[in-house]
Image (tube, rainbow, N blue to C red; front, side, top):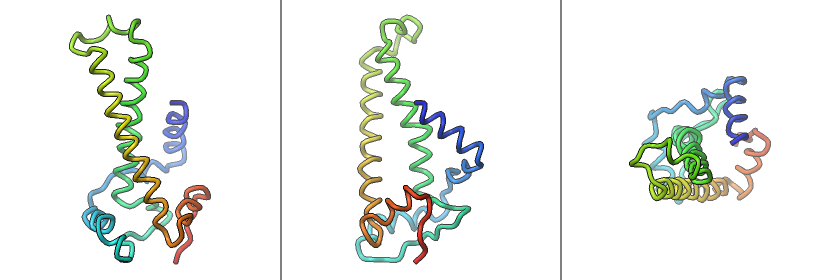
Amino acid sequence: MLLWVFGIFWHFTTGQWHQYTPTLKNIDRMLRYYVHGIFIGAPHPYKITVERKHNPLQRLSYLFVKVMIGPLLWLTGLLYLFWEQMQEQLSPWLGLQQVALLHTAGAFMMLIFLIAHVYLATTGRTPLEHIRAMVSGWEEKH
């Protein structure tokens, strides 16, 4: 949770928050590429610039992880952890089973994101090309 707070702080203090502003422009091209084009060697439909590091699908995915999945996991995890102390202050319709179900759903969403992220990280010209870019913050132009 501290890393998430630091990440939000960093994004706003450096102005990098705009990298995660969602857009639906050209998302259909990205979906077609990831579903079909990537397997036939089609050129990547998105050109990275310093101002636009993430394609529209990446923007939506990272934003969803940052503002939906992470907070869902943390809130339900804290509720689950401190259930005895918290249950009287909560709505009567929210029971431990609902908290556990929401927490499990969040965990599965995070697992799906992780698997897709690891897979897509290996789809560059070499399996480590995108991983180097993630670590260094820079990607070489081809």
